[in-house]
Length: 239
Image 1: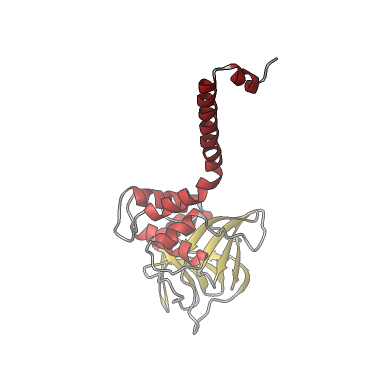
Image 2 (image 1 turned 60 degrees about the vertical axis):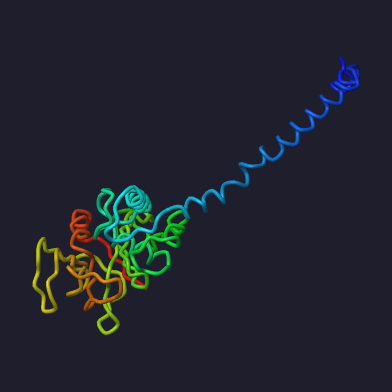
């Protein structure tokens, strides 16, 4: 059997030179093309993040739809996917920014898009086979958990420094399906876990700790949470 080199050698000199030149050119082109997929991922991902528009409360369109889908996939509570950056989406973004440890302004710009592409994913601190609640006072968020996994992340406003939310291991002891007028204001669908302290819906849920010891979530968030909470459910509150 003759090798490729011996076959080229039998050709006229000028044809051999042309053929060798073509072979060398094809080999040179093949090298970079083969290596491209291994190095293109990071620049392409960075370019994709840079190309996304800055969106905020009041924005609408495909970028908002993608944001909502991404937050839901990461277990953040944003309600439905409708392409409108409304109140529910705003609090979903607040919760995401809190958990990621970035500025909590509700604006989805380069930093938040970058974190959405490669986020920190919180884990449950306590393991229960059944559903449970964890309230992280440092992050100011509420986690629904089950079997060691975080199943939903909800924006929350716990007690301020002068009236802190008690820490410890509790359980839900009483629920009211409606408004309750307390000495300190109206509570929507309160779930009491320690004396007069409850997880409840509120018309005011700022990004900072502002309550008198209870754990506030938005009214819409509480409506979504209501069917998942129950008497006897474990509640862990920690910093």
